[in-house]
Amino acid sequence: MRVNAGLTQKEMADKLGISRETVSNYELDVGQPKMRDFLKWLLFCKIDTRSLVNQIDQIQNQVNGSVKRAHHTKKKVK
Image 1 (cartoon, rainbow, N blue to C red):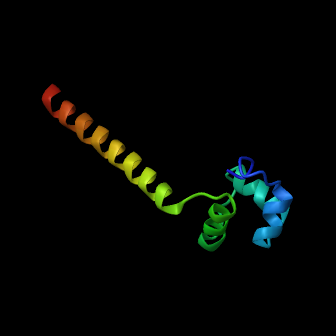
Image 2: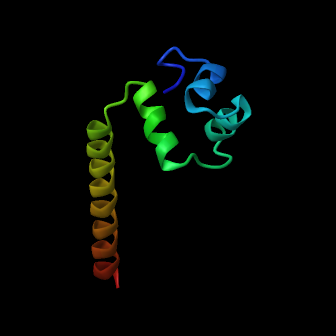
């Protein structure tokens, strides 16, 4: 997201008021940003939060559907 927004790690860090190393750690999945920083991150990357939530809902529905189908298939096999 950050790279697509044309921001360096240093620029993102400055915008969030954190260190460049912390930005790097977030991107490497070492630790997680506070919700406030995450929402700012999305804003700086021009990510529409409604769109993001809709995509998460769609993925969650797909996963739930797959789990239900797998559970239903497992019952039939027994």
